[in-house]
Image (cartoon, rainbow, N blue to C red; front, side, top):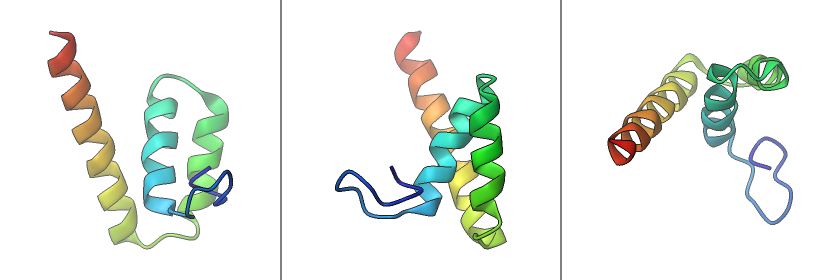
Length: 66
């Protein structure tokens, strides 16, 4: 939704990259492809912010599971 701005969600490539990255880490091939596709429309800084957000999410969920 974030990558297309559908379902009432505002287009947000950083947020989309974050979620595609999280799915890609889990082995989702389609997410890897989508992440690469939207990265073409993002700056290096935006990608860095998205990657940081994905890392933060992973750390947060790992702490909750512990």
